[in-house]
Length: 159
Image 1 (spheres, one colour):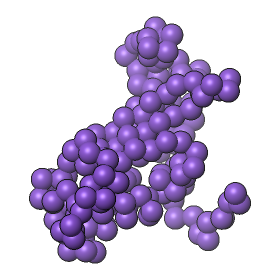
Image 2: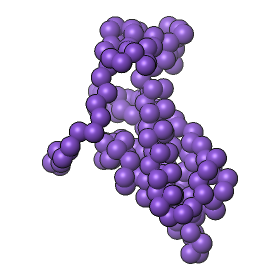
Image 3: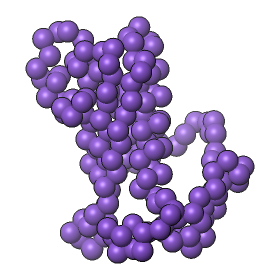
């Protein structure tokens, strides 16, 4: 698969880390400054710091939700008061390395499930995180715990 170069860079984030998963990270603008700790679940000591999976869970969900809200606005749908629960799993691939799995679950109280599922499908095509991970890691999209494919399959034209 070839990589399509960006036509223009709109924003660049810069961060420096030291010490890996048991270290420290900070952005060049000073807005984010975090201690990092290895979770006990993967053999670490735990500790008060965050970890890359937690940071990725927040980043992916925030970007995906912003994309979905833009799509909703364009379709004149009310995605207000929506929230995402994001889960990033880390585990062995079975080939000597490790991989990630992401699950994004949408709760959108002002939308019917089919409309929410169609919005998520559209956002998945536009979100930079989705485009970066597509074909590389498993991403599971759900609305209140139900896979969007299942909702769309059962859709009777309500969306």
